[in-house]
Length: 75
Image: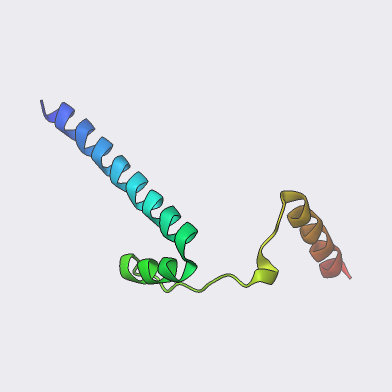
C-alpha cells in the first residue's frame, strides 16, 4: 500500500510540473509581460529576459556562432 501511495505521489508531482509548464506556455503565448509576472510570482530566482541578439533562430546558427567564437579565442 505504501509503495502504491509513493507511486501516486510521484505521478501527482509529475502532473503538477506539466500543469505549471502548460500554464507558462499559455501565458507566454498570450502575453510576454504576463510571463514575467508569473515567473516573479512562482520563482525564487531573479528573471532577466534574454536579449533578442542572444536568441538563435536555428541550431545551425548557434553552431556557426560557437565556431566563430572559438576561432576568436584562439587568436
